[in-house]
Amino acid sequence: MFSAAETLEKIYEAAFFPQNWYQILDHMAEATNAQGTSLVSTSSPTTHWLASEALEDMTQKMIEEGWVTRNARAEKLLSIEQFGFVDEAEHFSEADYNAIPIFTDMMQPLGYGFGTSTFISTPSGDRIIVAVEKKKVTGPVEKSAIAYLDQLRPHLARAAMMSSRLEFERINAAVEALQLTGLPSAVLTFDGRVMLANTLLEGFAPQIGIVARDRLRFAHVPANDVLANAINQLQSGALHLKSASRSFPLPRYEDAPPAIVHLVPVLGDARDVFVRAAFFLVVTPVDRTRVPTAETIGGLFDLSPAEARVARSLAAGNDVGGTASTLSLSAETVRSHVKAILAKSGMSRQTDFVAAVASIRPIA
Image (cartoon, rainbow, N blue to C red; front, side, top):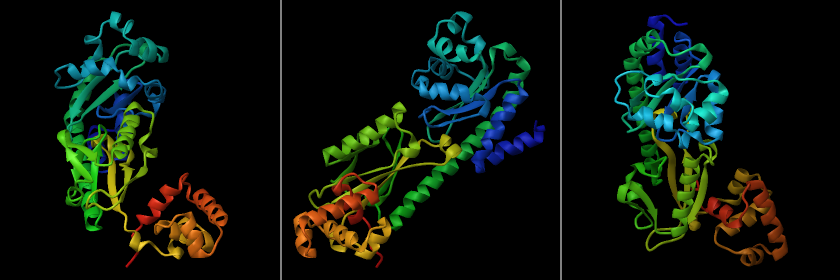
């Protein structure tokens, strides 16, 4: 158990060292005779969730059974005008506890009763729910426990604000760094809106544009479908943020060159609770007149010299027949090398590999 001074010190440390939030969550539970504490971002609770280890049974059930997307309990709590922690038993009756599905099908089987919670609004426009959870056998939330948590709440809110601002600045710096490397880029939120974009992306119109409600739109319609699918899967919980990376091609459009769009998840464990960013979107223009050397390609993908020569020929725009003619090989040999190249690169289609290689910028 931390002393009062140590508790405040830990809270403000967590703004700079986000992994320290777990200690704060555990302390809040221990100090109030509760099972554990959770901290949930309402922008995307399927992936933005911190919780005491003692709440693993609840968090696992919430995510696996999809309760985060049909959480009547959270909806009610967010509607309460509050200036501190609220006793949930004052807003849900025993009849509610025995009728509302999230109580009857999720919390009751695990032995949880009513807890106490509050929400904090962050500069990114999100609201973070802080919920202290109790097992029903330990009895109701005590008034003294709520009073103690209310003493901590202003400090929790300030630390959350600081975390949110620091994370926003970190992401903004990353977008500006990509500007220096010549790469058009943006940051997308969990609902697909553009949170930040550098000027290079704006110059990629009409191939890529930012339209109404800060939505990103590609002139190449299939690319919109890929992006929408990634966002939808992430929101539904079918895709975890840490495995959400993907790349897809954009063909030449008017004066805009062909390009590869890379979706890179914004990761950082606890830090990500405090910012709405989901993806970095980075656009790599394809210049087939500057394809890397066979040695570079071979080193990147662990290819044999013969495989690397075939890979470079394909990336330069030759098809199987043209590659066979250029390298004095049979078409069957080229196809055999292509199979080996795909196996080593982990890609399933020749076009994906070619696009990836063509997007690599050779060192001048």
